[in-house]
Amino acid sequence: MAPARDFYQILGVGKNATQDEIQRAYRKLARAHHPDVNRDPGAEDRFKDISEAYNVLHDPETRRRYDAFGPDFRRIPDDVDPDSWNRAAAGAGRGSGPGAGRRAGRGPAADAGFTTGFGEDIDLDDLLGGLFGGRAGRGWGPIPGADQEAVVDLTVEEAYRGTRRSVALEAGGQTRTLEVTIPAGVTNGQRIRLAGQGGRGTEGAAAGDLYLIVRIAPHRRYRVEGRDLHVELPLAPWEAVLGTTVAVDTPDGEAKVKVPPGTSSGRRLRLRGRGLPNPRGTPGDLFAEARILVPRKLSADERRLFEELAATSTFDPRRRQ
Amino acid sequence: MNPPAAVRTGATVTYALARPARLDLESFARVTGTHPDLVRRLVTLGVLDADADPAGRLWFAPAQAAAMARVHRLRAGFALNYAAIGLVADLLDRIAALETAARSNSPRGGGQ
Figure 1 (cartoon, each protein chain N blue to C red):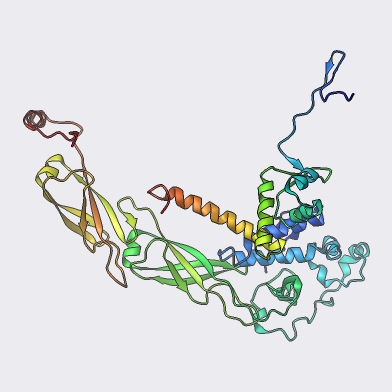
Figure 2 (cartoon, helix red, strand yellow):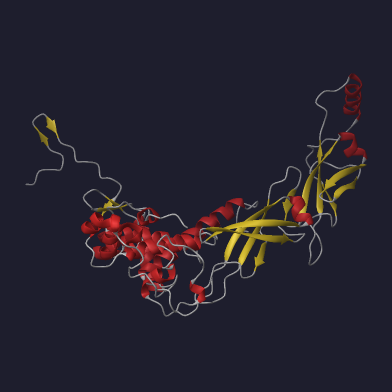
């Protein structure tokens, strides 16, 4: 059972709000939460709540009855006086109101399985006249559901190898869990389409699609650019000068990088095809960027050798061309 | 002759109150060339932002004049009703914010 909702709270207005204030709040909220504007899977339900609250509060008569009788006001016959109702509330019978038996002849699409807080024998569709029909009444025919988007966070390793994820979605007051296989080689910002898992359609129309948007979390070693991976390659000055072969971590294990002699900081060494895989084409590359580090403290011998080098060398990194 | 706005009467000096940076409904309607009833309706539709004081009078920030001009342009350029203009204006604002963010994130300082 969904918790009883306060319509004023849903619209974010006070109990003594004017009709203009109620309409203003509704218009702004509806624009922000309409399922075609807001792709969050929970937005459709919020939009329904907002429309439901507005439908009750924008009409002074239903608003008066809502204020008097609370969320169950539709069960109470129109000719009941609020004061006498309150006096007789303890002994009032239930289930004989105008809501009883309303569901006859409703299509299966209307029974989306959500509870409304009004009791089991009224469904929300009766109250709203369909999500999009709204106050204008029915007559739009079946409308397919809107597409939705949800974000799924992956590590670089998961993006490299592919993974399985369970994605929890809030819909209709209940949580829906989807088991999703993420293929190897997805990139940051890529959308994975799950057909028919989006917003519900009305009157038997098809549901929309759910798009999972991949977000690759920042990694302490790898920087991701498209399918290319960038890593830092720390080198000692003599390694950079003389050349060497060093091991670099990749998501697929270590790889050997040949550092050519005379490598300066910032030089990028490419390992072709060692970036993120591509299911339909060439995989990305891994770039190791040389970064020359020097010892903070030198032994006496090291200092002597560096001083000797300084005296001998004619290299001037700041020489103008 | 009419007395000036700030009058020295004996030892008391009366100062005109500083004009707050906001417009009342009539001034706003005059500045934007719009009928006050329409302005009021646009506030109700959530297309324009206004603060209501305890007496129920509406007050507008000067920036709302630009919002009103955009309403006129959208209304004239596309056959949109005022409720739809609210949606379009919201989306345009959202696009502008995203474009600004995209520009500031671009490593080349925009234009990409």
